[in-house]
Length: 423
Ligand code: PMP
Ligand code: GLU
Image 1 (cartoon, rainbow, N blue to C red):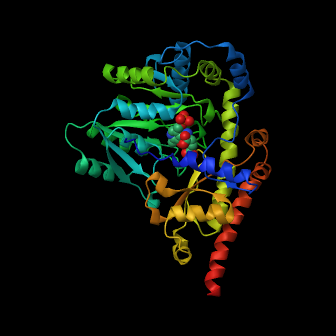
Image 2 (cartoon, rainbow, N blue to C red):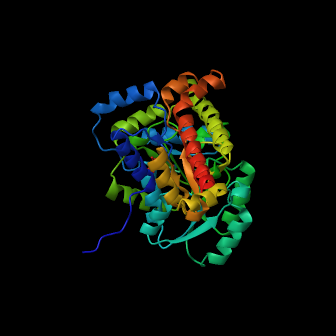
Image 3 (tube, rainbow, N blue to C red):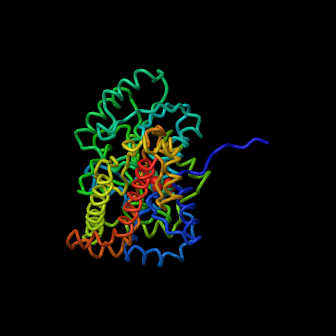
C-alpha cells in the first residue's frame, strides 16, 4: 500500500503540542500559534445562536444575500467595484486557497520566502512547480519588483500558468505593502501575465487601517482571499471568502464551484447567517475594528521593543499579530549548546523555557538563519478591547503573560552566556 506523505501543518501541530504540555501542569507561553485573541462581537454571536435552526444546504457559492453583502463590504472598504457574482464563500480560506491551487493545472507557483506555512504544501499536493522568491531582512521582507521580474524571466516556462501568493499584512512577519509598492509589483505581474492570490486575510487588522488591496490595482488577475478568522475572531467558525476578478474566465469560476461541490458542498449555513451580520457595515463594526487595531498596535510595539532589547532582531509589525524574530546575533552561543537550526532552537525554548515559537523554516526560510515567528495573541482579547480607548499603560496590563514569556526567553539567553563564561 502507498499513501500520500504529508506532515501535520506546523501551526496546528504546535498548537496541539502546547495545549498538551499545559495539561501536564507546565506553564507554557503560547507565542507560537496564530489565533485571534478576540471574540466575534455579541451581535454576531446572537446571530449565530438564532441561526441554529437552519439546517439546509446553501448553494455551493454561498447564500446569495451573503455574497452580495461581502461584495458591498469590500467595495466600500477597499474602494473598487465588486459584485456578488465575484464572491465565493467556503468553510475557511485555507480550503479556498487549496482549491485555487487545484483549479490550475501544472502551474508555476511563485512563493516569497518567508510565507505562510500552508501555501507550499498545497502547491506540492497539486504537483505545481514551486519557485521561491527570496526576500531579505534589510528590505523589510518585501518582494523586490526587479528580483521578481528576474526570477520569472529566469525560471518561467512559456505557456505555463503562473501564480504568485502575496500575503499582507503578512504572516509571519507582520509587515505590509504600500499602494506604491503594490503598483510596482503589479507592473511585473502584468508583464508576465501572473495570476496573483492576494491573501488579504489580515487586511482589516492593518494597525493604522491603511490597507491597500491588490485587486484595486491589478484587477484583471487578482484573486483575493479573506474571511472571518482574523478580523472577526472566528477562526474555528471556518468561514472564508474569495473575491474573483470581474472578468474571471468561466472555466476558472466553474472549476472553483465544481471543486467546492465535490469537496465541502457549502459553508455551514448557521455560520453563513452569522456572517451576514458580521459583514454589515455599521458604526459598531468600525468601533470593533478600531479597538482591535489599537490593542494590537500597542501590544505589538511593546513586544517588539522588549524582544529587541534582548538583542534579538525584529522589525516592528505594521498589521495583524505576528513578528519574525531573528536569533542570528546569538548564533555562536547557540552553536555551543548544540543548537544549529531554528527547529532545535524552538524545541529547546519550549522544553527549557516554556516558550512556544514556530521555526522560520516552516515558512520557507533557511533553518540556519535562526528565525522564528512570534504571535502576540496570548492575552484576554475581550478584556483588552474594553480598555482599547484607555492609555497605552492600561492596554499593556493585558500583555503581562506575554511580557513574562519574553522575560523567560531573556533569562534563557542569559543562561547561555553564563554557561559560556563559566567554561
Ligand atoms: N492565510 C493566512 C496568511 C493565515 O494566517 C491563515 C491562518 N488561519 C489562513 C490563510 C487560513 O485562514 P482560514 O482560517 O480562513 O482557513
Ligand atoms: N493561521 C494560523 C497560524 O498561522 C493558524 C491556523 C492555521 O494554520 O490553519 O498560526
